[in-house]
Image (cartoon, rainbow, N blue to C red; front, top):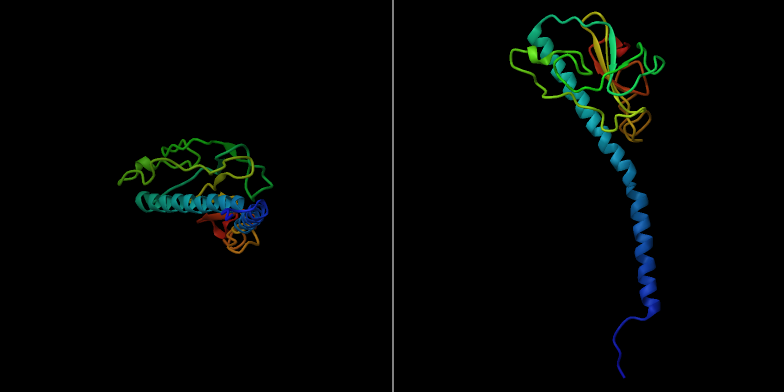
Length: 180
């Protein structure tokens, strides 16, 4: 009698091998860290886009003066987090100076370069965007990275290598030493 098929032992060995491979792939790829890296990439892109839009605004308007203020996309930022004052909560995304970046982009001769201001992908107590300005033409944009890769000490560390005054926040802007 010639029976074709697999024995129960053979099936259990194959299932065990597949389970070990699945666990190994999950540990190697670390999907949670990949999601955090994706959100950090969005943060870098958003902050860069806003920085470029403000540069266009400066080029178009020639003279810009900010009120000394600090606005956040979420909650209230403690003054000890960065070298600036306490942020007020202003999570609106309008580009008419009522958003979290208090610049009226609609005044530009070419029209607003942004249709709306972006919000942090998490926009929670630990991860949000910050706009800080002085009473002159200086400003700073800040974001907190959450992935190991982009955070302070990571392989693509942007927080401590951005030239800013904080080693735990990503900072861009035109303020001297980014120390607002």
